[in-house]
Length: 625
Image (cartoon, rainbow, N blue to C red; front, side, top):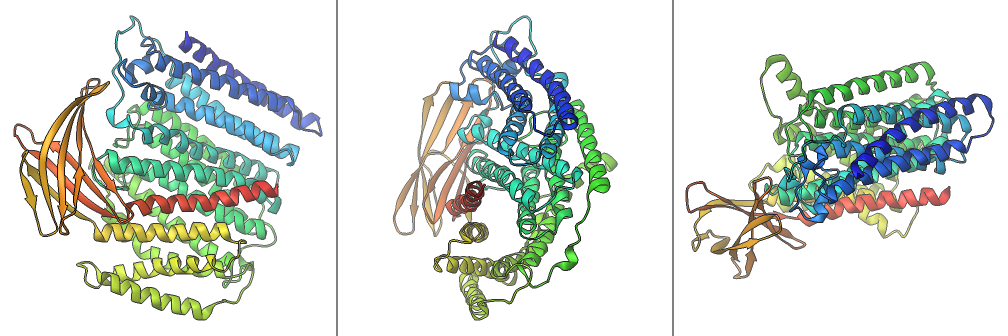
C-alpha cells in the first residue's frame, strides 16, 4: 500500500512540473508582479515528492518485499536504523532523494528571493524545473523505486554490510544537499545571465546559496572520509578513489566560485568566471552522478552497474551543457570593467591567482579520474591512477598556493601596499627553521617536505596572529584559512610520522620490536541481531611500559553472507592506534595490521573549523539581508 501511494505521489509531483512551467510562462508575459500561485504549486510538488519518499521509507521499515527495491536492499533481521537508511543506500532510493532535495531547494529559493525581480525568480524556477523534469523521467522510466515483484518473496537480499554504518547512513543525504544545492546556483546563474542581471546585488543574493551548498558538500565529504578511515580497514582517510574524486571536483569548483563571488560583490569584475564556475560546479555534480551510476567506475561507493541508466544521464547532461553554453555565448555581456582593471598587488589579484591554482588542481583530478576510462575504451587496457600521480602533480603547486593564501588577505581591494612586511619575513624565516628542526632526523625527502611544511606553517602562524588583533571583521576568513593550514599540516605529519606493522599471529603469540609489544590474548564470540562477531583481544605495550587494549572484530553477516573486518581505534590528541584482523584461509593464523596514525583527530577538527568559518559568513550574510 505504501509503495502504491509512493508511486502515484511521484506521478502527481511530475504533473505539477508542467503546471509550474505553464503558469511561469503566463506570469512572465502577462503580469508585473510575481504570482504567489507559483510558490503554492512548488510547495505541492515538494509535498508529493515527500509523500513518495515517505512511502518508500515505510516500505523498507515494514519489509515489504513486494517492492523490488526493498527486496534487493533489505532483510527482516536488519536493525530499524539501517532499514531506514537503506532507503537511500541504493540507486533507486538515492535518485528519489535527489528529486526530493531538488524540489525542496527551489521552494526555499522562491521563499528567500522575494526581494529579487519577478523575471529573475521565474526564469530560475523554469531552469530548475527543466532539471527536475529530467530527474522525474529518469526515476520513473529507468530507476523506479516502486517496481513490484510477484510472487512476493519471504525474505530480501539484504544491504551490503559495509554500508550498514551510522556515518555512511547520514553521509549520502548531506552530500546530496551539497550536490543538489549547486543546481540552484546553476539555474539562478543562467537566469541572471539571460536577463543581464549579474551584479553586486545578485552576487550578495547568490552567495548564501553557494555557502549552503559548500557547507553540506564539505560535511558530506568529511563523513565519507571518516567512514572510509575506520570501516574499510585501510587506516587512511583519502585514497584518491574515483568516487572520492567525484565529490572533490565540485568542491574545488564551488570553493573557487565562492571566492569569485566575493570579488564580484566588491567590484563588478570576474563575471565570466562566476558564470563558467556556476555551470562547471553543477556539471561536475551531474558527471559524478553519471560515473557512479553507469558502472564505469569500480568502487565500494558505486550504486549501479547499468549502462542504460548512465546513458540517460549522459544525454541529459549534454543537453544541459549545450543550453548553458548557448546562454553564455549569446546572452552574457562583460561589463566595462574587466580583468585588465585588476592591479596585480591587490586582494582581487591574489584571489584570481589562487583560482588558477584551484583550476589546475581540479584539472589534475579530472584527468586522473577519467583518463583510465578513456584508455580502456580506446585500447581495452586497464590501469589505475593512484596517490603517486596526484602527489607529484599537486604537491609542488601547493607550495605557491599556500604562500599566496598567506599574503593575499593582508592586501586591500583594488590596489594595495603590503602591510606587516617585517612580520611576514620573520614569520617565513621562523617557519623555515621550525620545519627544518622537525624533519631533520627523518628518513624522508628533506627539501620537498621542508618547503611544503614551511609554507603550511607560514599560513598557520600568519592566520594565528590575526586572532590576537581582536578584529572581528575578517573572523570567518581567518578561521577558515587557519583551519586549512591546520588541515595541510595534519595531513603532512600524518604521512611522515605514520608507522605500520603487518604480521600473522596465533592466539597466545607475541610480536615485539624496539617500539612496542603486541600480545594476542584471546578471541571472543558474540551473536548480534543480523551478524555473528569474532572479537580479538590484544594488549599493546609501548617502550614506556604503558598498556593499551585493542579489540578488532570480524563480523559474519547472515544476509548477504559476507565477512567484514571492523577496526578498533584508540584516539587521543596526538595519534590514533589502529588495528584490524583478518582470517588467514585454511590456517590457525590471523593477519594483524597495527598502525599508529599521528594527528588524525586534527584532520577532522580542521575540516570542521573550515566549515565553521563558512557558517559564520553564511549567518552574517543572512543577517545582512
